[in-house]
Image (cartoon, rainbow, N blue to C red; front, side):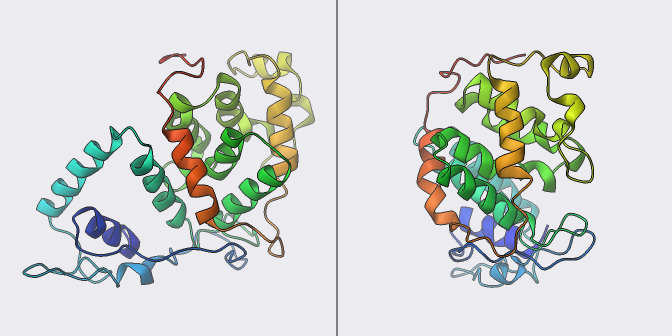
Length: 250
């Protein structure tokens, strides 16, 4: 757990501010592998309140701190205004600062901002902008099935089509980042073991990859800052769960 995570726990416990704002265009520099989170410096700013120790990058939270933070996370997850879930997604995104996939020229945080900015500027629906922002949020948790992680988080709040796009966007891409021509029809996807896509979802997934995902590794692209997307996140996560045509199980 890095410094930014400690700061987040400090924020949940009312013992620190957890870091400042964000702006786009600040992608990580190129390089192979995943680098340490640039959010570590934010963790050092989480100061202790009276009678408590700091939860900065030099002091890990105690088991009691973790238990208290976990309880607040659980309670916040049931908050109906969408704020707390949206805030947690923002924290996950910030943890991707400095995490660079192979030789990409931007880090995963900037990639997320770019994808969402492109979707927004293309006139995509608000839920698809949110999906673009969070499509790789699972990379820091479980890289091999990161699409499933992101899609599962979003599933209660988005349409079946949007869910299918996020769940399968990684299947449409070669490891070298090119779109797989063999997987651009429903028959091929079904033969590959994917679940049957809702109407128009396959083309939407192809468009998502071509227009917003694969292009979003450009260090010169003027991304919108994360703060611009926070109201959209809160609105999407404030929807009544499973009210968009989703079911609780596949």
